[in-house]
Amino acid sequence: MRRIASLLTVLAIAGCGAGERGAPEEAAAATGNGREELLGPFLAAHWQLPVPAQGPAPEGWTPLESSLAPESCGACHPQQLADWSRSLHAGAYSPGFAGQLIEGALSDPAEVRACQTCHAPLEEQQPWNAAGAPNPHADEALRAQGIVCASCHVREHRRYGPPRREGVAAAPEPAPHGGFEVRSEYQQARFCATCHQFFDDAGVNGKPVENTFVEWRESPHAARGETCQSCHMPDRRHLWRGIHDPEMVRGATEVELAPGALAGPRLEATLVLHSHGVGHRFPSYVTPRVFLDLWQVDAAGAELEGTRDRSVIGRELDFSTEPWGEVFDTRIAPGGSARLDYAEPRHPAAAALVGRVLVDPDFHYRDVFRELADAYESPEARAAIQEAYRRTTESSYVLGEVRRPLPGAAGG
Image (cartoon, rainbow, N blue to C red):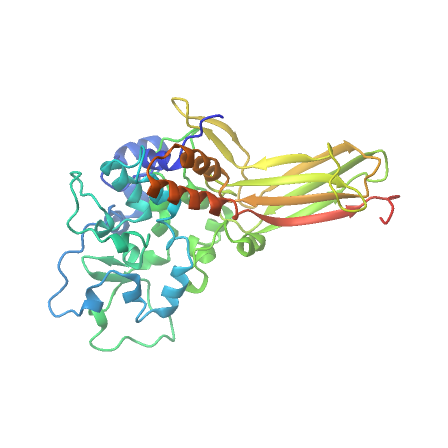
């Protein structure tokens, strides 16, 4: 079997733009998108990763006010806690991620810190300090909760957030945890860039491995003033829905099957996937795949062998070469479309032509986890990776399917 590079290894190499590894100056030269220039001084300081330890809480604060646990925040913000608990941010310290930190290339203390800069970014979530020694501030329970409320909202125990919405009651006086500091950056797309844009990555063919913020910045959506939050946090909901959510993706895309010649001995049609509501390339990252398929079926609906055509949407990189190579990049630009043109002989038993768009959010990870499950010796690591593999087998879904009866077919 061809050896498949673990993308989390790639993240450790390429994705630590704001932490202890990599230099923003190099990023500016490599990508033309300097980190501080893009983020601005507040966010450049706010997103030093790992987030420095909070330190002692102010005198007189209650344990609830001093806590970094999401459940403590939920005491006053129950809706935000409920939304977050169902999100991929809450699942950022997933079995597939955690298992790779136990054994193998990413289990070194320095690699663990590098990987956790996005997946579990608080210093209190780091098992090792910057010198590779056990971290006295470490909270293993907090670590397992991934990207917690404090990751975005708490620095040195000071709370930060967006302006209060109209009609929302003012906080009581005195306000818990001293209230919060209002920052407009929480409503701006650049707030998300530190984890969703690789500043230190020179990229392949001029495109960083993760380039989502720049893709958005160059899109019609950005020109219209639509931000990351507009789609992924509508009404300030802390859900961060994305490609794993069929409902969201269906609302941002459209599947169309345009029949050409269906009456003759050769069938011609075009399956089109329109990306009208995705504010970056679809899919943005290198892990998912989207498949456009057309095939013929008989009167019972069974696929007829040898009639299927497929088009693949995604970005395939070859991590085994130095420098890395790009195998293909067929992703859809914002407002664009992908198409599969079908022209095949009509099968004698064909009764209909079927077009389907399948989304596989964890395409890359599935092969990675399959290999790692066989390679790891640690029972804990193996169990985590096996669970991760199981999840990848359940994440794909049909985005849309269209059936066109063929003229002259029985029951057509």
